Length: 67
Image (tube, rainbow, N blue to C red; front, side, top):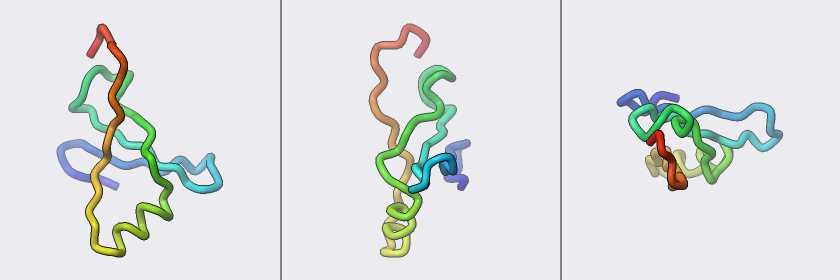
């Protein structure tokens, strides 16, 4: 799912619950472009159907000399 500005959501189909990951190449170094989200696809869809628009929210990365 594209969010604009090259930001994407990815669905991890290797997990039964469909955990989601965010992709934001505008932040830090390329090792931190892909990051886990705090919700599943079902949780995100429920929130979206309720009229909320959620954007990927990367967690703070520890000190990285490449960021």
